[in-house]
Image (cartoon, rainbow, N blue to C red; front, side):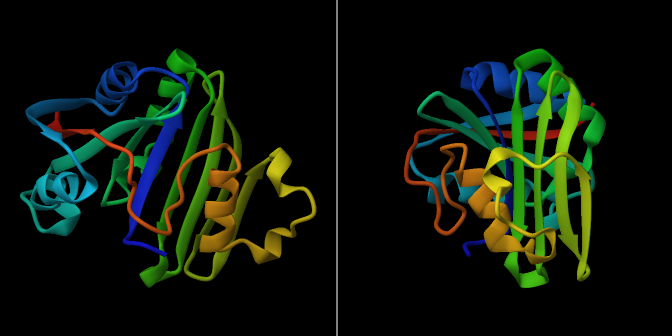
Length: 181
C-alpha cells in the first residue's frame, strides 16, 4: 500500500465537491494551489496538516477528477472522522464513497452514504472490526472477518475509483490549505 491517506468521491464536479466539503466540514480557505502532479500536491499539503506537524487546526486537501468522479483527499485521515459532514455532502451531492488506509497502523475504513444517510461502514482499527449498515454489491462472497486494508481498497476500486496502492497519476490537482471556520 502507498502512504496513509483518505479520500471521498462523488459523481459531481470538482468545484461542487470542494465547496460542499468546505461548507460541511466548516473550513475557511487560507490558500489555494494548482498542482500539476501528485508529488506537488503532497508538497503543498504535508506542511499544512496538523496531524503531520503543522499548527493546530490546520488542514489541507487535494481535489481532482477521474472519469465522472470528483475525488477529495487528505493525508491525515481527517475526512473519515466527521460523520455529520459526510452526511451533509451526500445529501447535497448524491452517493458518496469514502475510504481511508494506513497500512503502518493496520487501519482501514470504507463507507458509502446515500441521500444524506450512512448506508455502509466498515472500519478496522486496533485489531477490531466495526460494521454498520448493509453490504454493498462488491462484498458478495466476502466475510466481514477478512476486512483489512486490501479489502477496503477493493471495495473502493469496485466503484471505478483509483487504487491506493500507488499515488494518483491523473491530474491536475487543486490544493486547498484551510483552518476551522
